[in-house]
Image (cartoon, rainbow, N blue to C red; front, side, top):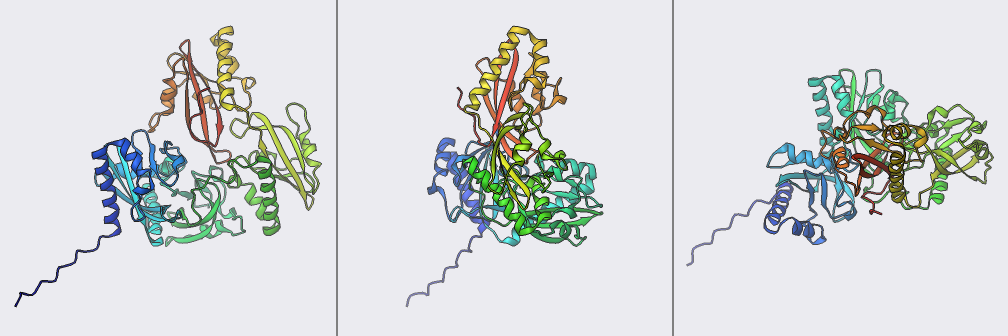
Length: 531
């Protein structure tokens, strides 16, 4: 009679974290065997996805995204400090956690469904590269991560004091993926908000959502026990409203708060990108009117006087039925003045032309401050009446060849220098008269000391290379490395006036030892082709 066969002991099932770590380890082994180029090529393909796991690969030294299969257009982008992309948190996670890698729960893209969801993320630093993958997580997990982020802020306050906390959490470096801290004083005034700095000094209790929810009042009721508050709020990347879930807690009289977004995925380009500007302007104004009719005048004023209401370059300006401005988020000093008194630098009575609008609407072309430089550039505005009030928005006329104009502007400055000398050049290009819309000149001497810096006069006399010191990517050093052949350098430019994330495309040329640079701004990443 045969001996009884022993029942094999089943191997314990691997946890989701075990499977994610195995996926990352496999990717590291693939890199060790096949090299970087082959690794990048393979993990950019759909064939590399396993059980809802995909690889994110980042060059740690350069903070460059090398692999992100869901959105190939992001590959090659800078994702370090100052970037609008959330991948920079992976670099910190990997480098701070040592060789074993670190974990965090945040929201990310499920590669199978293409939907944004809670994801448990592993990041490992190996050979100067950050290897990262994730798996689906429970909503409870991301809620825990939100509370952990707030707790770390409280710990920093306890150890370093209020001033240090305000300085840290008002900087872009404090962002951790979608997490950022907003800090409220004992008097309920904002002390820190890295996404919407215009809120600093205002009362959180005055913040009303676009749907009329008095979300600020709810957050201000937080106690030492903490509270969860749900409301609509602009996403820090897209600026489009999503449902947000915020954890707020009182500590030492202050409110420490952060939250996560529970809305739709952020994989698509903003609605205004590549849209017909005239059509989008009309749509933007019509949505403002719809908000007014749905939520009432006060809610409309609260929302559209907030930087949160910007959509790219579009913002609402509006008057009451007496033509007195009561909405203007770009130039709030206009509120309370009569739009009919607004006259362009060329003498054109643009305010009167806009005020002629009826319920049929009117289009007006005029000069208006650029949202970055505040120097006048051509703009096309659309205005329409409703209940006697004026609702209006507009778009800036695109330059036909902004890269070519940038190169030409720098060459004009070089020609001016050749004809008039260094002192005259410094004097001229330090003046507002040298501006050409968004174009202006930054000039350094042979030692890279700034001679002109029209948009940041306080930097004159400092070393250009020190401007980016202490950051992973030193833009100043990159510009200082330019030769007589010239080079393009593009970097993220968060426009604090509109909270719009732009790209500054900079042309830098050495001439006679001096460095001549100028730039243009748009929402398209990547360096322009050299003309």
